[in-house]
Amino acid sequence: MARYFEKLLAANPDWKWEVREVLPTAKGCTLKWHAIIPVGDAVVEEDGVDIVEIEDWKITRNEVYFDRAGLLKALLGS
Image 1 (spheres, rainbow, N blue to C red):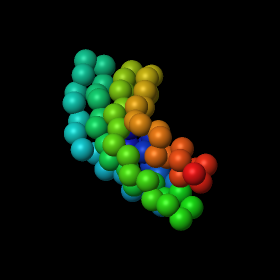
Image 2 (image 1 turned 120 degrees about the horizontal axis):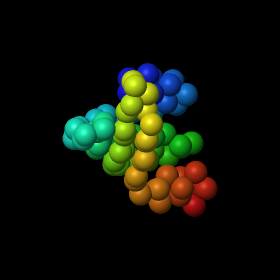
Image 3 (image 1 turned 60 degrees about the vertical axis):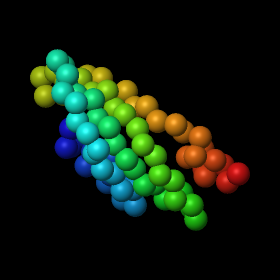
Image 4 (image 1 turned 180 degrees about the vertical axis):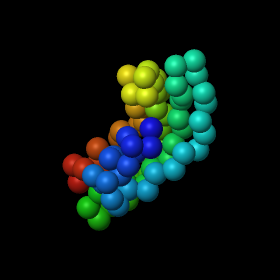
């Protein structure tokens, strides 16, 4: 997981991301997170959830859920 987030945040160095809660599952975990994402002159704050499954030390499933409305509004400038 650490390598995944290193790559994500390296590509987006201005993002601030923090884990709020980790819930272990049989195949991996569910992550609750909070992100602060600069978009132009705006700053968008989002809370979300990742469902992560790992097999042989590789991520085999990563589903990300959050309300995209604020991010889309900032990206579209409306």
